[in-house]
Image 1 (cartoon, rainbow, N blue to C red):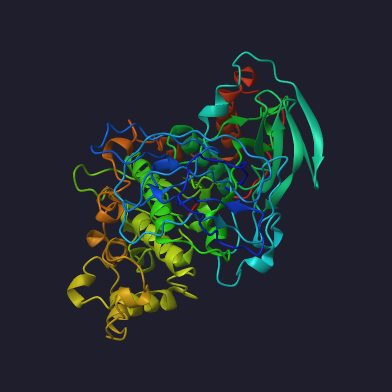
Image 2: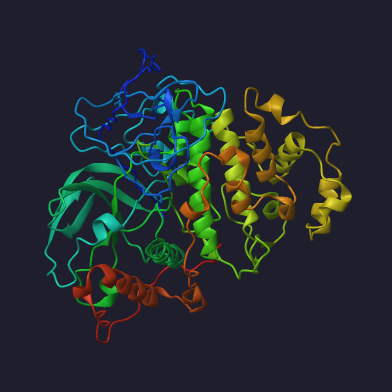
Length: 556
């Protein structure tokens, strides 16, 4: 599914400093993504903070205070300070809340306050929206001059955030009243509580707008998928993602907050699907390809959150299968959320092995640059390690500021991987089931790779160590998400009790049913009913009506 991204206002925090610290300059002072690094604070989960204490106090459960917190640094060589920090792109500020945490500082950390600025981004102060379109050529809020589109992914996709804050506002007995308005070339028909602000973007899968919710007095994003059932595979992906996002309840994973009921009398007239979500500012792809410097602490915090969300996803026995920077949404307080589950699949978990079960799954997953070797080597049985490989690729891209394995095709991709990480020995090819693939791997040049410390100069050894373990070519040797979270590189952030798992796996049994157009309409209507009970039961088909054709193809 396509996604939407949206904005937050200025987020001040109160800490004094001993001296005036320099700020990173930006060619465009607007559209900043602020990460403060105050001399007396160390960044922690969700941008929460704590003053130095002789003993570590009881740790509070992770909470994601969207639009209210900065990410902070702590330097043990300095005393406790107070310093008011604000995002440079807004003249009006909103008060932040703080929460206590204690972390040991990384030696050598820069104690200067810094801000990450998405250069070329435009920020809407009135409505707090900072959107990216769903295609590279239709970017709404970002200047293409500031983004290296040739080296980056095509087809930008951004959408939805946490559900709990808005879902509860929908009354199960409230009578639905709708109104229609024009948004670009599309007509939206939504609840009267939502009024149009502007069009954020459009792409192959739909149109995204920002709206104001009169009931909650918040700005939200609404995505419309027009003619959603014309292609059965696309409709099946929409259904899958809706079900997954409703199942997930985690601060680092997106969630649906509302849906619009179909205003039709007969089932076959149900065509457009509307998804309502909280707005977020941008995605990690845009941050990577901006001109602003990223410190290793920024990298650490982004990857930690991605791992924290992935741990939860894997605990649901779900593989994401399409992790990449544009599917990691980011807010100005540096909160990160994983999105886009249209290609996700389930697995049967093997207890205790950490890798999960495996299934016969198609190779047509994951943008090539983030695709695990076992997929490209025709190993149709794969599991959780494929997502860890993708996280490793994102990790390297955050440090390097360009794709680490930018292959033009499978052969080029595998060749680059071998050059940068080293050629596998014959005994290490035991996971490759295709003899043709084995012959190809054996013919690759047997050249020693350049050490990672030279490929990524000035990167801490513990960061390189966990990166190398994420990028093990052999899937069974690749680090698991739990092992990665326990790695010393994340020690100041890691807390097992604050890294929750799902209480139950996701039920993929609906995939076993033959999902033709009419059945997909029924199932998505039922999902909408969880948000809008007044639309139930599902309406009947038109008496004597014929079937409506839709495109049928293989679901990768």
